[in-house]
Length: 233
Ligand SMILES: *Cc1c(COP(=O)(O)O)cnc(C)c1O
Image (cartoon, rainbow, N blue to C red; front, side, top):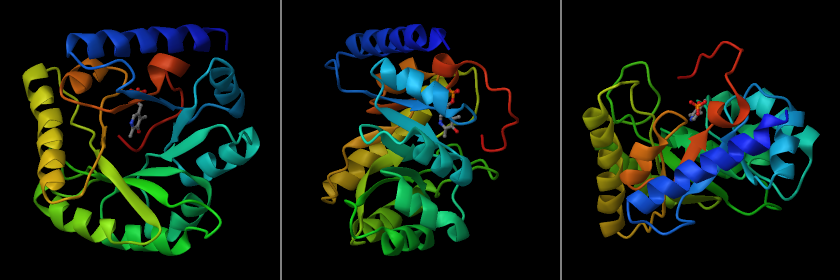
């Protein structure tokens, strides 16, 4: 895995350039390294190069990797679809969950979060492209869901997350990211104090940062092309 440090540097340079182009301060965008399908050794290689935040999509794979890497300096984000019968290992293992899209999941995570750990940091996933197959709440439901989630004792609502539909239409793509930002701004007028916009991946991070992303989720540009079949996006 000798290319991981170089890839991390290249991605950081893209983030810095996009931030500068958008007139945003350096350090305003967090890099989440999406290590799904890659072994613990890949995480260790990235961590040795200074990477701190890692994202996982699958409950069993992610929980096992967190335990295997066993590095208390790292921060683990769950970014995959979450079924209500699989919330416990996530509540017990991860620092963040980006994919809250219904109250039932949030209630279970709050109830299962161990008292020995700080509150679970969460984002609400919004289906900005309206695709039937995609996770995320409808934009019209986000306000009610956010208000309810903010009241749960063992969760801390940090912001919103979206995965727009794959498209080469950059005007459309930018409008999806902008929609998530507008929704965040609206929720903040209600007093929610959301500081996180989780949007942008390897292929579109520049557009996401131009529209206000505070956290980009980057897999293939750091670790390489995934071989394993994907069933989530
Ligand atoms: C896999 C995945 C990513 C990373 O995608 P890349 O295109 O490899 O950067 C980001 N977010 C989510 C939710 C993912 O499932």
